[in-house]
Image 1: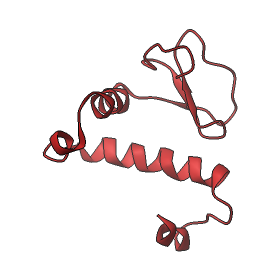
Image 2: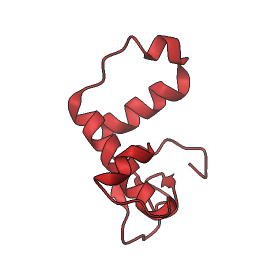
Image 3: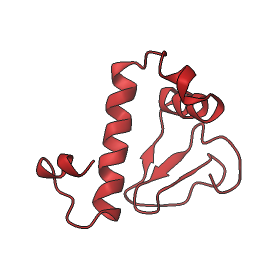
Image 4: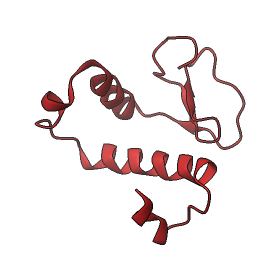
Length: 90
């Protein structure tokens, strides 16, 4: 987040590797609108230590959305990344 505001109702740009709040979101063709669930999960991860998070259950839909965002980000930033063989890289 560049401005420090929550990305609630904002977007994520896998090309830039950054999220934008609703007010500052730019026109980025490949940008993805962030769901409230993924924003809540990200804020929870930022606020709590890993030992607490490791005992929390994350909904399947949130995990799937996060995986999709990571995949799209990697396609821009990891040379030679292509599914499915690139799953060995992570």
